[in-house]
Image 1 (cartoon, helix red, strand yellow):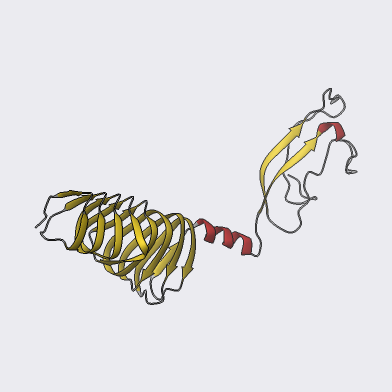
Image 2 (cartoon, rainbow, N blue to C red):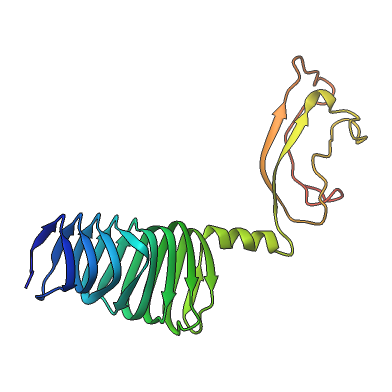
Length: 237
């Protein structure tokens, strides 16, 4: 029974006794089962199994490669700033959070519950034997989704950028530039008008407008009264 105990700089091995939480600081967790409580700055050696209660891991790392964590249905399982490699397996319910992972994360045999992943820089793989539950992914990650019936909401930066690049009609970001000194006749449009941008069939997002005034502008004939944006050359703004 280790209820309400604290361990510092220890090697922890085996099943955690008792029914309440324990705290582990700067420890090595070696094949621990029934984990409940908090681990801070600990090195984890595979395998690790958590209980149905609350388990929090803060700035922990994996040692000797990828570790396997049996999730089950915890009230809350949280990994904050985890580095290394980890396989989360057999989640049947509850709520799991991976906040700020750097390294490799694999999700295996998930059948229920929710898993929220916030990646700093990670490779994430979701296996085909994941048949239930919901996974939400955010941040900087390369995601390989081979899941079955698991709902995967991939909001990672890599996936969003890939979607933009592969879109049939991507939007173009840019800036418009206009020199007042070369206003008349630069593009053959006559005084008082100037084509700033001609579209090429793509939708265009105008990010900003830069107006460069001449050192001694002469606007007595055609004073500048404003800027208009047109969707094509013939359309009245």
